[in-house]
Length: 311
Ligand SMILES: Cc1cc2nc3c(=O)[nH]c(=O)nc-3n(C[C@H](O)[C@H](O)[C@H](O)COP(=O)(O)OP(=O)(O)OC[C@H]3O[C@@H](n4cnc5c(N)ncnc54)[C@H](O)[C@@H]3O)c2cc1C
Image 1 (cartoon, rainbow, N blue to C red):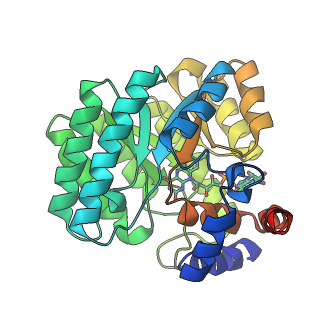
Image 2 (cartoon, rainbow, N blue to C red; image 1 turned 90 degrees about the vertical axis):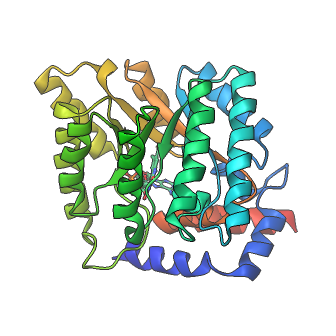
C-alpha cells in the first residue's frame, strides 16, 4: 500500500522538469552527488571504472546507457548512434560484453518500424563484437509490443538478445513458457512501474508468489535465466528449488542493481553463485533514479542529506 502510493508519487515527480533541473545540478556532483549511489556516472568512462571494480570482485556486469521515451525520430537515431559508440568503447576496454537497453529509447513510442531498424543496428554492432543485449521491460502499454519486436528479431536469426518479464503482470507466466519454447534468455524481475489494477497484481504477496512460479518455469525449461531481485525470500526460494531439482548454479544467474544490497551480491558470489550487476550510466538518469526512490521511500533520506550537504 505504502509502496504503491510511493510509486505513484515518484512517477508523477519523475515528470517534473523543475525537479529534474535541481536534481541534475546536485545529483551527480563528483563528490557527494546523491544519485551516485545508484548511477555509476554520466560518462561511459565512469561506468567502465565502476564496472571494473565490480568485475575485480568476481561479479559480472551489464551496462545500461540510460534513456527512455525519446520524443522524435532524430533523438531515437542519436540514442542508437550513442549505443553503437558505447559498444565500441566497452569492447576496447576489455570488460565483459553485456548491455541492457530500453525500446522507447530507440523510438518505440514514436514508430515501431523505426525502433526495429534501430534495434537491428544495435544488435548488428553488438553481434560483430560478441555482445549480449538485454531488452529491458517498460510499463504495461509496451509489454506486448516489446515481446513482439523481440520475437521478430529472433525469427530473423538474432540470438544475441534477451528479454525481461515482470512477475507483477499475470500474463508473464504464459510469456515465460513462450520464451522457453523459443529458447530465449529471460531476466525475471518483480516490475518497477506503477500499474493499474487490471494490468498487474497489487499485493506484494501476489507479486512474490507469481515470481516464484515464473522462476520455477524458467529454471526448469528456460535458457540460462536471470533471477533479478534483492529480496532474500525470492533468492532463497530460487536456491531451494534449484537444489531440489539438481539444477547447477552454472545454469542460471542472479542479478542485482548497482548500489543495492552489495552485501548480498558479494555473499552469493562467495557461496559459488553467479551474480551480475546492472550498471546504469549516462546523463538521462533522472527517471531511473526516481523509480529507485519510489521503490523504497527510505531512500529519500539520503537524497535530502546529499542536497543539504551540497548547498
Ligand atoms: C538487474 C535488474 C534489472 C531490472 N530490470 C527491470 C526491467 O527491465 N523492468 C522493470 O520493470 N524492472 C526492472 N528491475 C527492477 C525490479 O522490477 C524491481 O523494481 C526492483 O528490483 C525491486 O524489487 P526486488 O525484487 O528487489 O524486491 P523488493 O521486495 O522490492 O525489495 C526487496 C529488498 O531489496 C532492497 N531494495 C529493493 N529496491 C531497493 C531500492 N530502490 N533501494 C534500496 N534497497 C532496495 C530492500 O532491501 C528491499 O527490502 C530490475 C531489477 C534488477 C535487479
